[in-house]
Image (tube, rainbow, N blue to C red; front, side, top):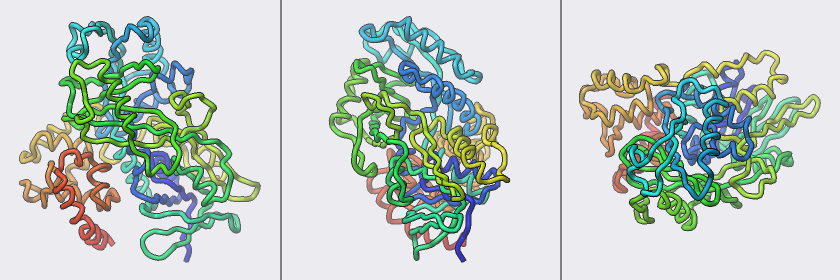
Length: 504
């Protein structure tokens, strides 16, 4: 018998998983298929900020900034384990934008989105403030404002988990080969493990990110109604450059900005670039020119220069932006477009163009709003006051939760209990179980990664490979040696077979 669903979603990035969660919570039967791992593409390659985008004000994108700032506070409440506030230090560069203009922009940024949780902007005397210590002496004035941080790949996984908890079917490593309208429904051919399968769906969402046009032409056999502009953004990670917990936002001579962000306790994340891209997004990688650009951007400000040999990790992602005719990649809008194809009497197909991680929830609401006429019994919007799995505690309660966990599992080193809380929130207790010592957590793969945690990722988070574990579900690839990573890679296939068999 062919399985029948209300909604089939192609793409397991943040938009696809966000739509799956919202739709399942409204009572629709949902299947999501992803050709690789969840968040394997653009959704794990962001700067990992939840922000309005201060520089977007300069380009006049006021609605986008307002919506993103409102979503910023919703997300801080929705996922307090993987999202938290950050203070951003903006040193004034005398040769670039005038400081009164910057201050006026920050005033607007403070008020345009109805900020409630986060502190306002303040002016800094950088020669007297700790934030000025890593900076060259010529930078004397600065500003500090609020935005937020999120673990982007875990955000995707948690949306998928919540969708599955609401009866959505999540199929990773599954490609949609073709979809055609047939007798008032979509008939889809799926290829994954095992024989090819067919399903039907009353509507399709194409949330394939940078592959959205490929899915339209190759799977749905349609022409793209919206021109897409692929823009590559690259990042580098180095050892920690400064002791304080604030992030820097540096102005560049080309009118772009570059972030230097405390990352995974012992590192600093630097990014991002903006350059047009052509080719397969899966092949995107950072160029020497991009590395040099990022290093020059931070070295313009920092006393201690950062060199190519200091880089410990590099990653790149391709953003699928709506082509609005902007002359440069940096000016292209990060806003999203939802294109609906629904000939009279035929099942609908909705394609998602553009977007940014901060506004994924609002995008999902918009997508369900466009599809609502095809589902008369669909439920009302619900995600604005929801919490993601493990996030059922106060938006500023992570430290208190860690202290509780430390008392319950006193054998955990503080840095490990902190990482677990910041990854899993209240699900930590389910992962640790009745363990009274590290040995009861199973095999130690290094870097604080134990078998119990990997088991959780396999059973509940669709992890199948060492890369899934080390570079998406966690960033422990920064801590495990190459030999330890290889040992995990050898161990994973048999472990996955055992756990999948045990779970039926």
